[in-house]
Image 1 (tube, one colour):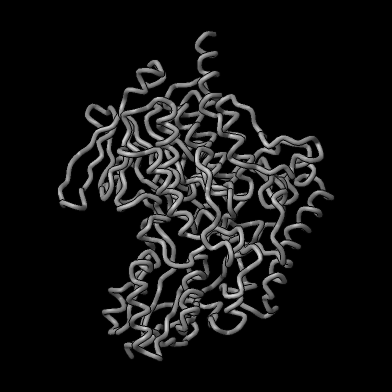
Image 2: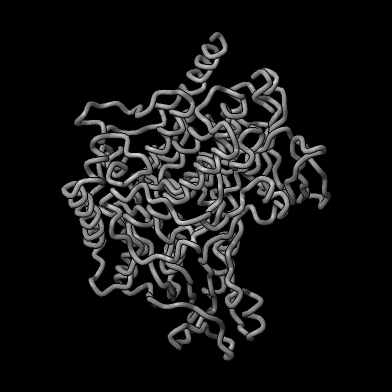
Amino acid sequence: MAGAKTADSVRQESIGIIGAGSAGLITAYTFLQDGFQNLQVLTRDKSVGGVWARGRVYPDVTINSVHGEFRFSSLPMPPPAMHERLGNRLCGADMTAYFEKFADTYLSGKIRFETEVLDIRRGKNGLGWDVEVRDLKTGNNEVLSYTRIVLCTGGCSQPRIPESLSAKAAQQAGFHGTVLHTSKFASSFDQILSEAQANPDYSAVVIGGGRSAQDISSLLARHGIRVSVVFEKADGFLAAPVQLPDWIRKSRFLAVFSPNIKLRTSLERFLHTTTLGCMITNGLWNWLTSSSYAALKIPKDSPLRNAHSLFWGVRSNDEGCGKKDGFHALANEGKIKLVAPNRAIGYSADGESLLLQDGQALQADLVILATGYTSSWTNIFTEKTVEELGIGRHPPSGADNDEWAHYKTLASPPPTPPQKDQWAPSIYRGLVPAKNITKRDFAISGAVFTTNNGYGFEVTAHWISSYFLGDTMRLPSTVEEALVETERHSAWMRKRFPGTLVSLNESYSSGLEFWSWPQAMDELLEDMGLPIMRSGGNWLTWPFKVVTVEEIATLSEERRVKREADTRT
């Protein structure tokens, strides 16, 4: 076990980091800062960035973060590339450039590109890890061995394609158009424009109501392509007529109005466990919803009002002040046709149309499936390894013990699938499989759903490094204790976000923190024995203090000092 070794000996052992997205990059950087040198980052892509890798980013794609949010403490981010059009909003090109610069600056020689992971399994005699990979340049397979693994594959790499809407189903039905998933849109965009320019009647149908569907349909519409969007329910969104000040947008303000598994402060306890606090909290979220519709001028009869709840769900976007040529504006103008609520069920025998659940047939030269992603873990672990590690989802072990029954803000949930259908994995803190927690040789980053990935991934990287180094931490002492705690957390996720575990894949939902990400990060800091609520403020001002990554810039040094002090005692 790593805990029986010295920190210096652990630093000499090898670490494999699977994935070169934002979580993988900051994990590798943090490990290097902590003295680990024998590490390697594996990615099947030709460049870093994961979902923001150069080959995946299409023109004008925007993200939910504003400038200064999605970055790491060691590297400032330059002003947004599309500042004149988007204000302080970030676009895909900003993220691509930032992560490439981060890797060039700090991780030279540590990343192995175009390397597809085929299988991760226990090493010989149950020690370490063997990773079978394929070199995509040569086609050769080999097995790489590591003492420890950090899984940073995220939840947006394996497309979810309904069988009835797949390219194979289209071919079998005689459909003459093009069918592709959003993951292939960037590489197909130039060809799409070429075909549209050659055919004045060219039309596209986008299936899905999420952010990718909205970005892609608005991009097509801006290029003069007739586009329809088919969805059952749209993403919720936040919007305002003016840019929100940092003391609201980048503070703990929304976090305190989101109930957490632990109500740490008297303000949170007031807001979520008293009748008056509940009225205030419900009033705020209702006002945010209605004012957001008003800010983007969404008509009262628009299908866009049939949206996921800002409070009860995690399918929400931050639209800022909106864009004159953005999705909602183009939909309001009729330049994007909304076919909703509806569902695509297959292809018509006429070879030209998509069939909908209500009997409609939509003519389409292009069908884009914005249907989300499946777990990125499915294809890289055998069932045996999944069982040994305990990273698979499982049904609830029994009726949830509702220790949060006194939360008045959770007293009236929306209709939800039966508890028995809301499976969850047993992953402690969303970072370590409970069954493997005492071995300190496997961790996960990027599977906890938050609204501030930069801050979250950086704190997570420090937590995992401390865990691997054998630092004194607040951890379950046995597998049984860890399993009890993960069952408790699963019950909380079902209580807080009813039904969400049914729709999200396990590589993106080992933890659902979302609005309450500051509280979740405080828990990780507290696990490491470090100060929490670092933004400061007094009893009145603390919810409005701006949270920045600068406040965690010294975590490596703080952990080193604590480690040395713990060693002396």
